Image (cartoon, rainbow, N blue to C red; front, side, top):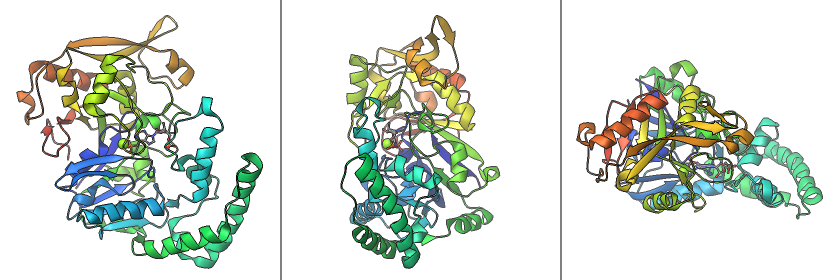
Length: 427
Ligand code: IMO
Ligand code: MG
């Protein structure tokens, strides 16, 4: 059975949750392998519309075991809120497990994320203020607290004491903020540990067993390739690896066991937060896409920047991830447009380039070169077979396949599960 990594191929918000929810009907295990509650995965199914931030989007499937992997970070308060929301809808969360190696988002991470962003407004990343940069910095700097640590009361006490002393120095001496109180945090997080204990386990052993039994495993990405710390528009990105390579690191599944990598692309582009986006449309077409698609962040409610499909960035994304196929989401949003454009190159300093630059200074100067397509101007939301799409729509998909370099497995023509065209098998 395959292990399929579902990867955000652009700047996040591509519809990974929607795709995972669909594929999870057939999956045995779904693992969230990176990020934290900075993610916002909107899923629409028989339970209505749900916005998931840390719980894997496979939770609605009655049989899939869901794992928050070692590569993800957990805010326990936010997790319990989400579990409560799901239980209220009648969703069974007893199949949820959390890696004992996943790091914990602590109150000082959130505070420092706020202070770092507000103290340098002109260089702000535009983060989600969920403590993501600070928690992953601490992980790498070996100052982090892991979920499993919450169960060892005495060791946790000493560890938190040591870390909080340093954090309070930063809070008071650098930012002039009030120090945080040790006992309050300690008590709160020991209590979280108790409540989390039924969920905590050695998830790599569970996954190993699942693979040996030939089960179908989905690895659910968060954020997107162009927000990845190595390959994204650094420093305007997130702090954990959102690419296919990260799926192995963040789950403990060996790279040689991942059999498929499904790249999730919107049929256009969006970005939320700061940083360059060459195809951004600051005009009425951009506004039209935003309103028609309701492009507002699921986590922060911020309006998303909208633009044409960037095939230069998409081809780069394919190079990094090795997509075996793509899922093209929000395709129906383009239904009303008279003309649709794809960016196939950039003009910069009088030259045309076709490769996505590492430098954001250069990317900021890039002017897109576009190929234009006549719009199909017909509703696609009820189409279920690729051949039934208007011919202009088929042309657009085929050109994207050529430019990105991999076949489209799925074309999503609406938010509901059934509004999906399976052009070729994704599993
Ligand atoms: P999903 O999983 C879109 C962006 C933020 C900001 C940058 C850093 O729903 O696709 P962070 O809080 O991670 O330190 O913010 O990354 N960002 C996302 N943009 N979708 C997401 O997740 C995102 N998660 C973070 O807007 O620009
Ligand atoms: Mg999102």
